Amino acid sequence: MTCFTNPVQTYAKPPDGGWGWVVICSSLTVRMLTMGVYAHAGVLIVAMQSTMVNNSVGEIVLVTSLYFGFMFFIGPIGIYLNDRYGTRPTMLIGATLSTIGLFLSSFAFNMYYLYISYGAITGTGHGFLLATSLPILSKYFDKHFASATGIACVGTGLGFFIFPPMTQFFVSKYGWRGSFIILSAINANTFACAAVMRPIIVTSQEQEKKNTDRIHYGRFKKILHGLGFQLLCTNHNFALMILGIFAGGISFIILLSLIMPYAVDIGIPELKASFLVTAVGIASLSIRLVQGWVVDRGYIRPICILPIIMLITGIAQLTIASTTMFPVLIVACVFIGACDGIYFPVHYVCLKVMVGVTNYSLANSTTLLVTGVAGVLGSQFGGKIRSNLNTQVHEFAVPIPNCQCESQYESILS
Image 1 (cartoon, rainbow, N blue to C red):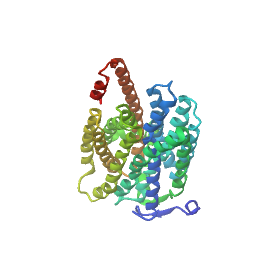
Image 2 (image 1 turned 45 degrees about the vertical axis):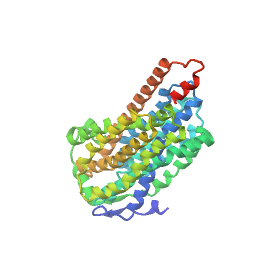
Image 3 (image 1 turned 135 degrees about the vertical axis):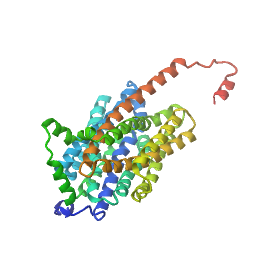
Image 4 (image 1 turned 135 degrees about the horizontal axis):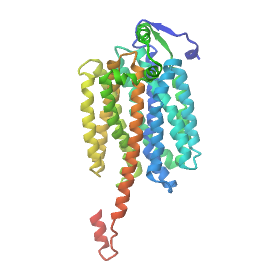
């Protein structure tokens, strides 16, 4: 209860430690749970395909697409509530919605039910949690902000590492309905994460915010500024970075959603295929443990890292699309995970440098919204591509004649 009753502490500048380390652990846990729930999307898609045979791949993929879209579309609203009412109340709303949404998903009787329970309710709850988990770090950390962000973003790698095989185990033992109930109970830990988000006042940041508030906007411009869109017009570097985030987001979401169904289609066992996403998580987790320390010491400018990372990611994704060998798929996923482990923490550091501490939460909300658009488009494009490929395979498949040489045909095909 002391988390709720302690008075708000005031600092002349960010303390760079103290209770901030507890806040980092909370942010890490929130990102592990939210992104972990999305990382197991491929496992649930395969499981639901076997029970909802009347639904196409695109209709099933739309469940996770809506979840991802709501999770990021709600970002500007989450940031607005965070700035107006504080991090803790906004996170409590997100914890309540996401826990209820996952529990209700276990009672789904058709895809439209899941569109609402999992896509809309759970996605909205996780959107509030995700939007508020990082901006508070800018109040607690300045000198070690890159390290703090890198540690918090380790949660994403942990989610990718833990949740796919864990969910696959739950599905095989309890079915996808039982898995939703268990995931709902796990998600309830976000209530504890919200409780430790202790607010503080940093006088230097408050003064900078007051200077910004003196600028008068019209009603429409004031709304755009409150949601962060004004930065797109006034900061060209930020606008260019948003374009890169949009392009990279589409390809990355296609990978996370469909890498496991793709692996199953080419004959890899389901449990083995789930470790492809886990490989992304292991590599991402390993890199994030050290990248913040390197960036804080100024060995290389963060803005120079981003284009190199995006190029390597694109090459690895092309490799996945052109091979059916499991070892090659694992290596490509490791490269993608390593790039992800560097990209996301560095991207948040670049945001702070580009727009400043005062506009950091606004820039973060715009980034979340653009990522949500990329997520919805990426999932749908991936689903349509996979459906079209399956259709072509069935159309052009030639049955092997039943003759005396059947064993020879089988040996050649194997």
